[in-house]
Amino acid sequence: MKSLLICLASLVLCGCTYYRVRDVPTGKEYITDNYHLNYVGGAVHFTDLKTGKIVTLSSSEQEVIPADVAKKEIASQKD
Image (cartoon, rainbow, N blue to C red; front, side, top):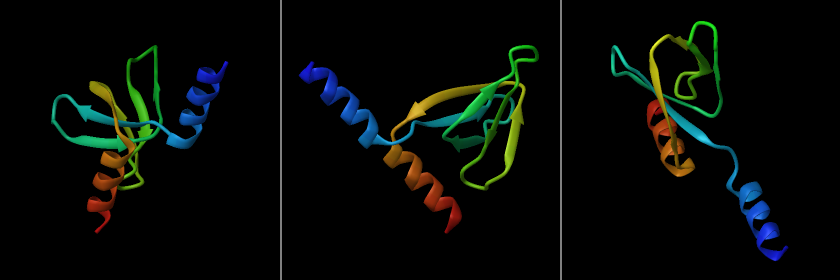
């Protein structure tokens, strides 16, 4: 029970999950904290946190990245 509480507390304190989404054909990378996969067409839809633009990609790769890395990349883009 104690380990379950510690695990739940760490999830709450860590905040949200960030993803690096890569457009396979161009190699361009985006950072998001949420994306939606369209199961019919295979496209992903998300808001790029670097620019605030809504992006739709038909061919992409996604990976989870640490929050500190995501926040650094977002901040460097907005400077």
